[in-house]
Image 1: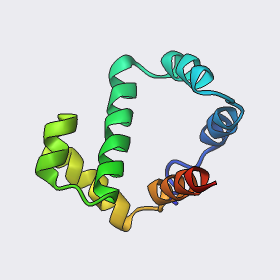
Image 2 (image 1 turned 90 degrees about the vertical axis):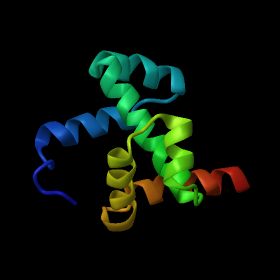
Image 3 (image 1 turned 135 degrees about the vertical axis):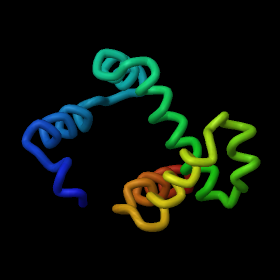
Image 4 (image 1 turned 180 degrees about the horizontal axis):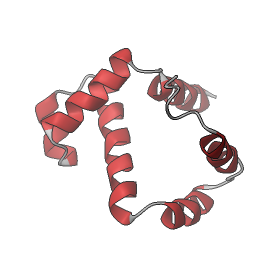
Length: 99
């Protein structure tokens, strides 16, 4: 975990996020917290990560998401060398779908 981002304020933010109970509540919260561009950028990176996780090529991802190759590369680096946050979420979603 990146110690630079671990602060009391960040802990409080994440505890707040964990209290959200629906997609609609997430929309309300994140629309208040993020600018439209910030939220769309986060969503794009998440979509890129999902596509990389399923073996899509950079070209396929760029065409579908509009992400730059720099963004795709950054997300790919996070998937391969990051804290495994994407992997954790994808694994839990897969488990949920198989129930």
